[in-house]
Length: 218
Image 1 (spheres, rainbow, N blue to C red):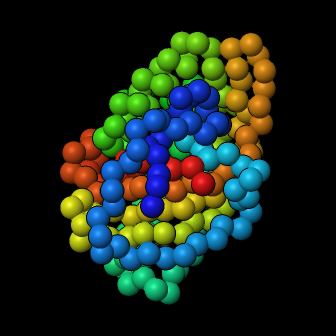
Image 2 (cartoon, rainbow, N blue to C red; image 1 turned 135 degrees about the vertical axis):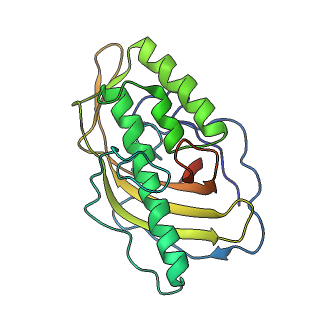
Image 3 (cartoon, rainbow, N blue to C red; image 1 turned 135 degrees about the horizontal axis):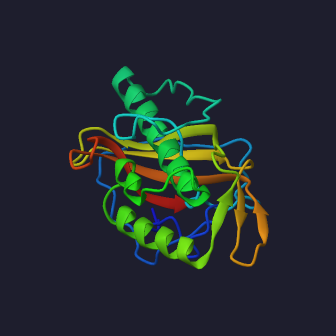
């Protein structure tokens, strides 16, 4: 499975896909692979997202992350109760990750270190660098407090016994309430966006729990 490590962006705008050039590390064997189709997110018409994040709080998300998750991840019959709970927690972290980046660009949040509560590893380093650079260049999003919403989510891979435990969430996220504004004042409406989020369990966060470690565009 090929995938790219994705920071909040190389172009780093809040609503655009942005891929870092480093390929992702191999996923451990023994994963539960589940086929997935996401309604409402066309791979041709929607960009992969990782510059405008997530809402909701979870084990690894800050308690004040606001979420607009009108659609909860639906129960997956192939998952055990433990796996289903872990998947739902991982999905909340995906939303929290996306909402946090959106909030940083809109000014609803001003502390870049909030990213540490929903992301881990190289994704944090890339995100902090890219967001700060973009803000310095004049990129922003509006309105302040704009929320994203979960359209659908499914686990494509799941390994709770791995080191670290890993869940890959393929999510369709609606960022249509977010408007990206370039340094030149060009406004770009957000869309529904689909991507795979690699969510790992870690003890090294400000709030230990699940955190996004990679994002791969669909």
